[in-house]
Length: 173
Image (cartoon, rainbow, N blue to C red):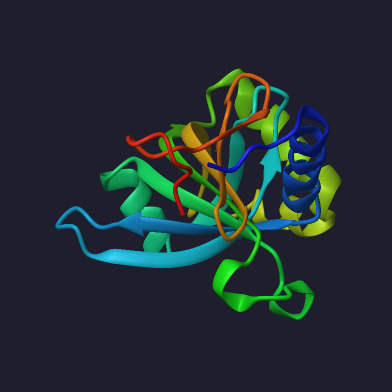
């Protein structure tokens, strides 16, 4: 059984936070109403409660998927060039419930302002288009993988980590 010291766990928690903070886009898996999978990406902002916000066009398959099947899985992954072993690239994965934020919601302008602050005037231009939708992706579970035998559950209340163990008490892969 692998043991992780509190100091190492703190370092891994920081690494997980740094991985997500280093990304300006998230990879997103969605499914159509009939279960057909799709993978895509979108620029995002994250609020203090840990919710991710994306602003996407109806021309993208994932927008229809999110409207018809409000679930998504999102991925943050270390670049291949920065990964010593491509079989265990550092990554954080979240399973999310999805909610559309409509224009009449007070949060709509606040979240679009945050996106515009992060990504610039392109968001101001996109705001003028009628086919864009704002979605909140609220994590329901999270997993961080830091290497072989180093899988962790992400606590959604504070983004802290806890080692994943199998039913037999051993760490899972």
